[in-house]
Amino acid sequence: MIVLRQSRNESAGSSEENVYQDVYRVLLAGMLISSTLFAVGLLRVLLHPETYPLTPEWVRSHYHWRAIWQGLKQFDAFTLMMVATALLILTPVLRVVISIWAFWVDRDYKFVVVTSIVLVVIALSVVLSHFGVK
Image (cartoon, rainbow, N blue to C red; front, side, top):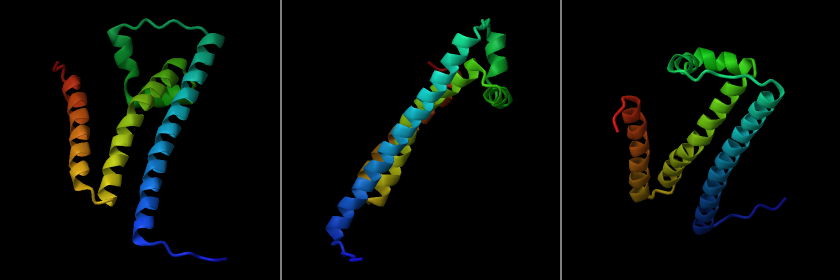
């Protein structure tokens, strides 16, 4: 087996490719898992039609970890599609986090700051919407 040594410039390019591959893998995995959960949830709805009242009380009773965990164990269609939606939304957010890491590894601190600001804006949007700020 012959091992070739890479120059510093070549290894930097390889590192950059690895970062892009990591981002690609995260986006692909998020999309595939989300799509699978949607498909299973849709199949469950088609095979076992149910109606949900969607009253504020009913929705609140299903938006806590215990109910989500129980719903996943029982393959509840509503829970599967709710988790699929959450994963689909969180996948690009995870991409932002990976980009921050990638820019840090590449020592591109300007983009670390810019991407971190994007992450802070996303986090603030979530927190402020939780408190009803529009």
